[in-house]
Length: 230
Image (cartoon, helix red, strand yellow):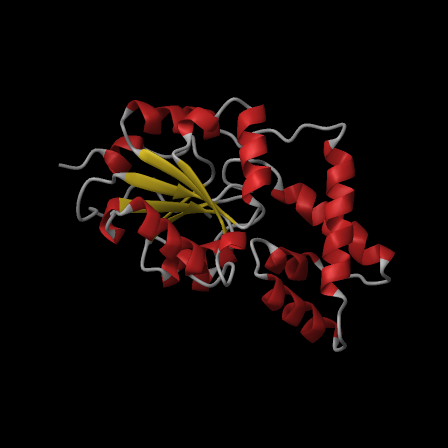
């Protein structure tokens, strides 16, 4: 269940938000889950939903360990992931992935209030840039950072530390929006304040300790509470 839409007083006005892409701006995580499941089946594997959810925004090495541990045998993670990508690409040739509820109005709000918006995602930068341009929302984004550009992906903090370095902002001047435990863990380990945007699940007890707010979607945020600080 989402927390009430109110925030503890943040140290100073927020100058930038770091946004995950899949599951926060783009309603794509449900498709990733679908095609992970199909790829698993093609290789003769079946995994419950709670295991597949662990693969969201997940560093490949960790994903392989999770699957090998679950199946109690070496798991062909890279081959299965490659097949999942093929299935997803085939789907996208004839289908459009919608933006998440409230995403466009939220981006407009940020732009109108001179708050920087950075995409900090596990997806390739080229993919994100293409999707942004296709939807004509690239003008709302100040920069795109991919976990592919750092040594270790989420849940390691590398990509958020890189975003901080590029933005030249203090941790207290940034607010992160994430939907998955791996993404939240990444931002938390980078020392950032995190808002969870519910997507395929809500915060469990462990995740709730690492966030300052949980909302059902980006339209369900009292923007004044978040950004109007003096």
